[in-house]
Image (cartoon, rainbow, N blue to C red):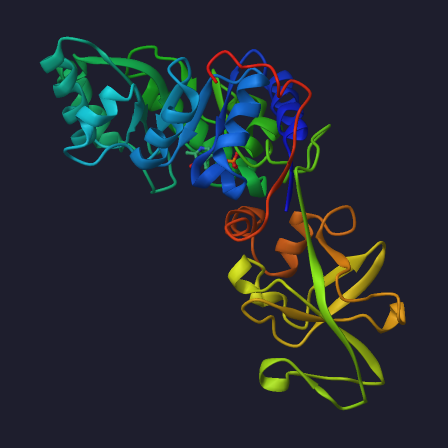
Length: 362
Ligand SMILES: *Cc1c(COP(=O)(O)O)cnc(C)c1O
């Protein structure tokens, strides 16, 4: 697995130029979508990023240890009851998704006599996380509940930005506006990558970008980040009718060269690509034949004659098969494919030019 940190930094700067004057935060939850949060976050710091979103306290504490003190780290899922003191000690900024989360964080702020940084999330029609209109009304009735908080952003999340449903985006923006109008004039954060790239009205003051930074959203000037290749373990020639793989779901139609490649579903390579996906050698498409196994899969390399040998590498994600194409073939989304890769591969990072320079909060 190759991870191009120069492309990570370049993509961050591209999105920032596109979203200006909004700030751009990097979403590095789930180990930076499976790419390795340490190297990725440091490359982002070198590219000028100072705002990072993760999912939970465990990820946030880990990231704080890697970045030092100067960056803002936001916790998307908020805090479990009882973990507030640890979050405050680590200098984290929780996203407050409910009045209960808000009251506990504000209570700690009042107890320590210091306004604690926070983001307040509103649910504007996704039914996932955030205050509902009735909660906003309750807050408006007792604004003292905000004492002890240093509210950095009012936030929401779009349900349909990545599928480009403008009507839903517009409805969510309108709901956001009407709730925001009842609250103090805090800066706003509404857009993920897709919304930032396609819906100018959603940009607000802080964009939260993940997938575009990782090069998996088609967009002007965005570069691919991830490459994946695997090596051939063994090659055999089979006669017509010979079965291949578990369940013998494939039978050779002619005399075929079958190559066994050392990657399988335990590596995050989808089993859904059985008899469906492909690997590439250069531009030659080598169809996956039979079921993808746990640690290996077979490809039909007949077209290459004897040119594919044990030890050779074939491309799984790269110039001939993008992450998005592989995900689509597997009936999934780039997010899922990306976050499942990486646990088991040797990761090779291509460094950005500034890698030797210590970033401001690295
Ligand atoms: C994961 C996440 C993002 C990042 O979305 P991308 O589509 O990867 O840019 C932004 N905001 C929230 C609330 C998220 O959960």
